[in-house]
Image 1 (spheres, rainbow, N blue to C red):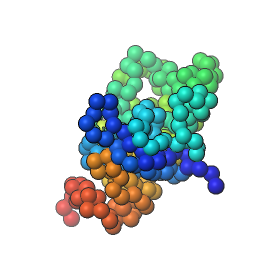
Image 2: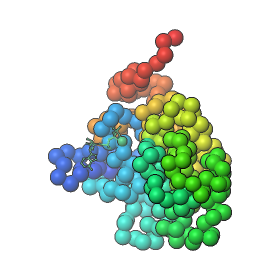
Image 3: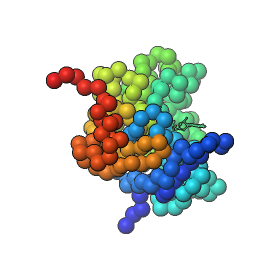
Image 4: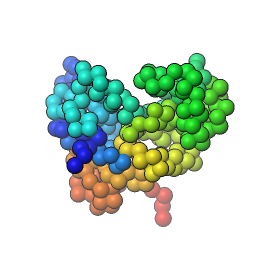
Length: 255
Ligand SMILES: Nc1ncnc2c1ncn2[C@@H]1O[C@H](COP(=O)(O)OP(=O)(O)OP(=O)(O)O)[C@@H](O)[C@H]1O
Ligand SMILES: [Mg+2]
């Protein structure tokens, strides 16, 4: 059996100088081509969990595993495979793009930093990545300030997918966007998932986005996973009172 592409085994994290663990005894697996949502109230540890999965933070207990092996930042060959396989998109499409660089250079950045392509080799891949996210090829010659929030998030997604990663980790990728733009970016993520078999791990406060994009959902409270399973089950018939409160706190239109 192939191992899960990403896995946390009893992972814990306490920030240096922190009084308590902000992630506690978390175990979860992400299978290739699958999708997982992380939900929970502000401060529950969702971003911290993504940072662990990205190798940006190291667990102070338990382990993070990639393709079945413990992620070790000292294993350069593994780290290279990992960086190429696992990419990320963040919430704020304004601060995540360097305003002084052209879109072409921004999107090409992973190809260069991973040593996959030089300047010339990157050009067709950048054009293909921009096309995939629905931006015109001439976007490459322009600067971030010439684009709207939704377009910038597309640019961030183009950058994250230009090296053909297997996994995309996304922290609130649509929460800074207005409702119609949000729908379009959600559709784009669904398309990447379906057509390219992209594995998706996503943090979102928007449970309707979670329900439409992710097969599985893990609910975090105070750094612990209180419930995880099939999204329909978790959101439709929550077993844990915290999940029920979380669902009830979502504003709904009066019917
Ligand atoms: N660099 C840091 N140093 C110390 N504590 C931190 C650090 N980053 C986060 N924390 C703490 O860890 C806890 C979890 O934070 P985290 O950012 O993971 O929450 P979150 O679920 O992503 O919240 P939100 O929905 O508001 O983004 C919080 O109590 C936060 O104060
Ligand atoms: Mg967060």
